[in-house]
Image (tube, rainbow, N blue to C red; front, side, top):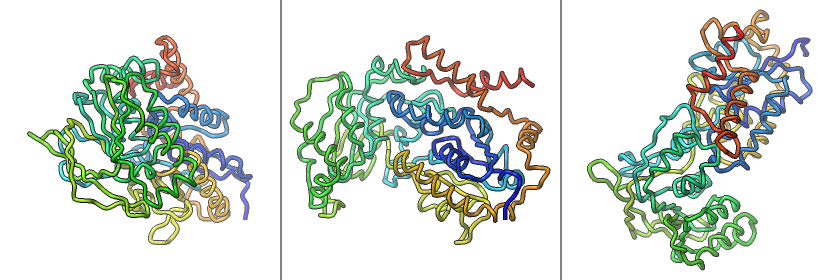
Length: 460
C-alpha cells in the first residue's frame, strides 16, 4: 500500500537522538513531513545542557545538529511541552507516527543512609545548573571546602573539574554569569572522587582523564593502595585500548609528587559508599567501605570502613528517564518500554509510537550509539509505513503542517521556530564575543523567551 501524501511524523525532543532520527528519516526514501517538538526554547538537549562549559570540543556537535535543523525540510517547534501544551491524543490526531526522544535528565537513586541530608545533591541537577538549564534555580550552595563525588564516569570528572577549577580559568567559556559568580565564591580545597571497583573498571574516557591533569593550580592525587588488578582487570588493560590508556594515565599519576597546588582532586578506587554522615541535618562526612576484586572485575565488601570529612556529596551514579503519562514505562531501566524502538505495552506493539536515544536504551553509551539507535528505530518505522498509513488516527483535515500551529496558537503557546532560534543564537554569540568568551554566553530562560518570542510577537 502507498499514499500520495507525505507521512506526518512528530519527534519529541530536539537533542542528538531526535535530530539524528529526523535526519535519517528524511533520507529514508519515503515521503515525509517531520516536526521536531522541543519542551525548552532552545534545541540540542544534553549537548547544550549536559556538557561542561569548558568542553567546546564536545559542544561542536551542535554545529552538525544545527546543519540538520537549519536545512528547511525539518520543522522545529520549540517551547512546546508534551503533557501540558499537547496531549498524546493531540499527537495521534495530527501525526501518523510519533518518535519519543526525550532522553534522561533525572539522577538515579542511591539508597544509602544519609543520602537525603542537606548538602547531598544529584549530579544531573548540578550539571544542569552550571550549564544554565532553564528548569533549575539560578543559585547553588557552594559553601563546602571538602566534597565527595560518588561515581567514576565522565560526569563525575566534569563535576570534579568544574568544582576545583579556578574561576579565572573557566571564565572565557560559555559559562553563565550566575554560575561564574557562584564558583568564584566557593571555598573548595579538596574534591574526592570515589569508585567502588578498581582502576581498570572506571568509565572515564582517556581524553577526559588526561585533561584533568592539566587544570592549573589543581593537583590530582591517587593512592597506591587503591591499585589492585585481578585477572579480568589485567585482561582489560591488555586488550582494550581505552582501558589501557586510562590505566596508564592513572598509574603514571602514582609516580608523580603533588606540586603543592591550592586545590586537589583525589581519585579513590575500591571504596563503596556505605553512609553519608550528618550533624544537625547537614553532611559532615562520608563513610566508605573498602572493597576487593573477585577475579571477574566485580567486587565485594571487606568490612573495613574509612570516614572522610566532607561538607557536600554529589552522586554521579547515572541518569534516569522521565515517565510520560500514557506511555508504558520500564521502571527497572528508566525507559519507555520498547522492542527495537517500537513502543510496546505488555509485549504488544502500540501503533504509531516509537522511541530512540537514552529513553529507548537507558543512559549508557556515547553520541555515536545514539545515531545507531536512531537507525534501528527508523528502519522499523519504514518497515511499518504501510500499516502506519492504514491505521493512522489523524484526520485528513488535521494533517496539514499548519494545523498544529493553529492549535498551539489557540492555546496561547508561544512557539519558537528555527528562525526565532537563530535570532536568539546570534544574540548569545554577540554577548559571548563582547565578553571575550570562546563561543556563546548562555542566557537564562526568561531572557531567551524575551529575545526569541519578542520576534514572534512582532510578526503576529
